[in-house]
Length: 626
Image 1 (cartoon, rainbow, N blue to C red):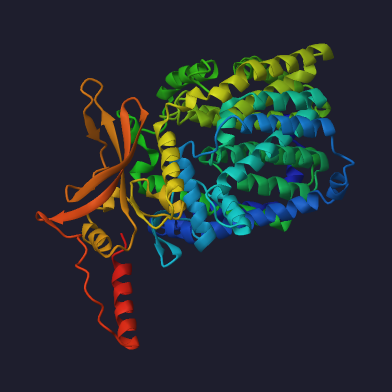
Image 2 (image 1 turned 90 degrees about the vertical axis):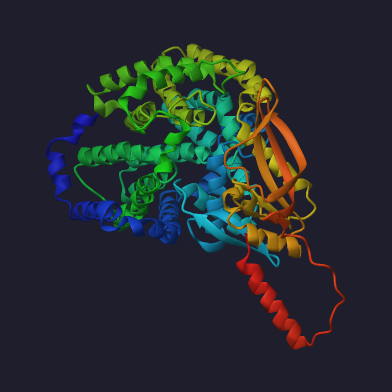
């Protein structure tokens, strides 16, 4: 298949004028993203321009899709709908959504993404809020940081906020939509590769994966990542079939957005480039719309965003695993492979896996590679869908290899196993590539029956029990704190918590615990003046298994000056205790500095004097917001 890349047609392609403009655009984007902008300005550019760059890419994608699918009216009219496909996709989506409660499953990712979407919605800034306050009925973000996570998911979530009003639960609504889109794309690609049996098999295999259900009911960007991979692949198939400028534009803009979903998704730009080069050299001609020429410039902020890893040593989170000094190394591969096998074939109580998908995928991958090698002998007879899927297989292999060389690439870790989702989709595609080579249709239906049996016998019971999610304490802690919010009659209190972003995104005034000692005088002012109905502190204690003694987690102590009164606590893990306490008073040099003043009889003031006093107090109040 790739042999067509070289030959006489290649020289004709190189002489195309717009190709030179495209290469110049790519060079300018690389130069601006990696070298031209100084480090001290890079994060500012991302914060100020990131939203608008993604908006331009998204608008270009929608415009190109409209041009490509101009015959969509026929689809909407029902002439191209497959009722069986719709039923299978709907049933698969329901299986994934009904067994787990909606909530923030991977806290550090999902809350940071929600916070960034909040800033995008309110201020059009790429900023994760760290401090926020309700100021006379208007909630204001007071401080934040540019997060390391790519911004396409927060952008889409901000669009949902724009059209429906801001709600934290919009993150769950977006993932519900993406769940059905993902299964629909899987059905469509499966039909192209292996007929209706292939489409049904792809949907059933994914619907039987508890890990997918866990993410479908969460607020993370994993579902969007899978959707964009399959959408880009299908648009690549259409480009290989049509070979026109409109299809190329849709394909390229989809790849531009895919690269901005997760850090690792940039590797899929390699198969996108190979598909484009293959089609051009096969035809000996190039049709490049001017929008495609400008597309690389929309990725300038991506390398600028990655400067965070250079500017903040903590961004790699190497401290999470003591003893590791390099984020990537070949020495990590053997151990990570062992953990990958432990995840793919672990017990239902330990891992949200699908042994049926893992077994079929591991069997299919070598046969798929063998089949691809045989295609090179007669590339002209390979269907475009199979050819493009095979090229995208390179992206899945690169993705898997990258994670196996990552210091924290343990698929059986509660936080990391979501990174295995692209590998599971790769398994599904390998199975669908091999399926047409099975001559007996009865045997193909047997494979489908085995997948359905795996869903019923292993997938559904595992999702219903979701025992694998109980060991991730931060997720359960977040759910408990959201219960606390729901139980409060009004959000007019202040919460001191190092996970302040959780409270800010729910429009509750909050400040990090690390700032509380520095802002002790200001917090005392608010406690004295009753500007908040209450001031609370969230803390986690570690429990000594021998003595039962409680030890406060590092970073959760606001200082000895804060006198606390417990109001709620819960044992979410055998060796931890989570507690919310009320700040009763604040002391300084042994004396209380937060006690309210004695109530005095009101002194009549003129309207002018009253306004002066009000403005003076408001100015002091704003300066002392914690």
